[in-house]
Image 1 (spheres, rainbow, N blue to C red):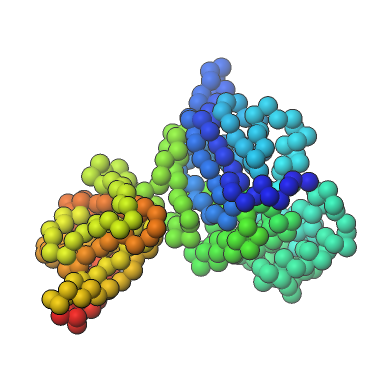
Image 2: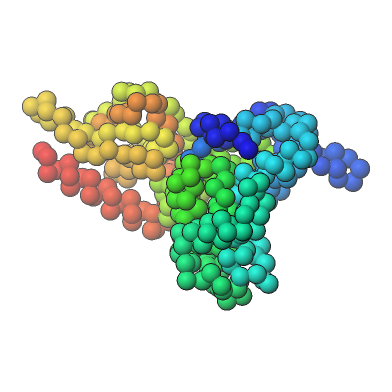
Length: 372
């Protein structure tokens, strides 16, 4: 058995990982100098184009492939050079959720869930049945124990797959495009279910996805591009500007006029009365928006967190900032900064986004006017 105290910090630690395939007699590099840490209780989304190396990285983390170069630790166990028998034992502590559910049609859903428990060292039929029923109750299928996969909807099948992955309380959950076969509402419900159960167990979650509808649930979003890992800032932009289309987000991602800035605790980002030709999306930390009245009294208008934005008033009206924005979190704040031209060009293509921004701007102006 693995010691439980190793799950308190990093579940996954990757350092300078490289991986290659043989293609036509030549060696092709698919992962290049990947460095990554995933902590317990964290939900991490991994995005990237087809062929960028996402599936390869997922399979390496899942102990399904042998490591070639670099270091990869799972539960503080180094995988480089590890024996296959030890890889198998580590896989017992990982839960896998697949795009196509992978349920066995000749078994009912209770039996499909019990399969995961049969791989555990302390398996017993009675305990497995009880645990399977408990987790099926948690995913809302308590009245379907004896149903077969063919009798279920797509959303129900994914709930069974989630139950099967989490029934043995794995410390790491790996999901490969889990919402691809589901509609928007059902897909979001599935992701929230994974996240809630994982947090209850203190597990880390890594989800490979292209689905922008679920970006807001992530603690972090990272992106693979040509085998190299980078922060998915176009996805971070989607948190604040959720109405943007994929084409508009791609424009943001590929334009060199946006950047990420770090501000220290207590630092002022925008000062009331200053001209600021930029739009800001908060991607880490907390800021406070306030006005200084004539009697020097400070009035807090709002507290903003990850996914919130500010600067739209100065941007859309061409005016000076009506309020001061200051870091109030105890740790540094990271902000995605988009300059005026790129921002206005982007939202001009999206009437819905512009309408939402105008509505938010008028709401903030109304609050500001009521204080003066």
